[in-house]
Image (tube, rainbow, N blue to C red):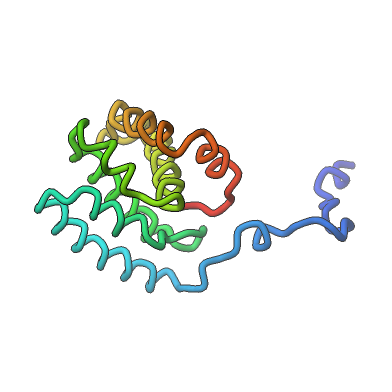
Length: 156
């Protein structure tokens, strides 16, 4: 009686997009992405210890791991981004944001939203810090960045 509720009507639509067409899968394997994330992690730590927050952001936001299969690499990268954001002084936020290019700003906006999503359950996330970054990033990148992030289907 309830079979009609489980019918996939998109199979009959020639113009329907598949999930892979909307967000193409990263061709690298999960192991490769994890190795890249760990290599970035040592570079980011070195830059953080020297006080180069903008350089650390450039490293971590360049070529972020995307896709459902890259769970470990995505979590490692998110924790690196949150470490950078939490260790940056408030007066250094605006120069760091201005040093990023447009795609890096959009990627940072994605990580801000991921951090806010995690903020309810994780004690390591300071939502006040994320909101101050969001405010400065929106001033520089505009509201278009928010729209691009909300409509992009690639998960970071």
